[in-house]
Image (tube, rainbow, N blue to C red):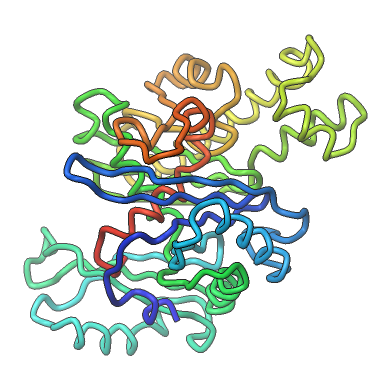
Length: 359
């Protein structure tokens, strides 16, 4: 399924980020001066429809996506979504440089049994040829991606239920890496040559990925997100989860909430990011992370940018993938800026409209 959905090139596909708490969508076009954001939309997800990054209720998710389609554009019928989590495997493997793409596909199919820790009849594979291996010029680096077929099919079915046609099912870490390129102007001029960690903090999962000289080299999911902050609010103020979420979004918490719940959560979040950085440095052999780019809904928490810069000693920026873009008719810049960090994944997915369909 994955390989079948990644063969051709198309344009004007809606990037749809199916999250645990909401569905986010972005539609981009391309003009002479760069990308144009034509529209964006967000819709809350019924609780329990998505658990641990897996769709539990296709019909409910499809209903939410149908609302997205009405908001984003009635003419937009093609979409790209993504998989993530423990059922997604990505590896760089080394193959004979002389092999054609067809020969590579055949060879990968043969060797996949030893590369993928799942039964092959339960997974979908795709690959992309990268560059010649520096250590052995007779080999080429190949990025292999595999995902559980049922995860892919669930997203395809949900998009179909929402009146979209699934053209691509991507991988979330790749989408974030793609959107990172749009954020380079927010970072110091040398960032394109440095080690930059992108931390996308969702409701239940934090995606930690790293680029080195603008090349994606590492990604890891952590079961941690903004939902923990909501639960802290609910517990401290004796509220329901829904009441706590509403208070968090509308900023109607107690005057003392900064000391009562925000500061403790800041501490936990900082520990999670510090641990993720240390794990990356240990496994990669890199000496340090030069810059941090924070995205996701939790990136909007007040004081987070300065806190991470000061406590971790790493220059930190809150992501805005639309900085420098032109706006389509009807886009309210002030409203877009408020939600820009939450649209990182959806933006990276929408960018697939302008790139070849292999990952």
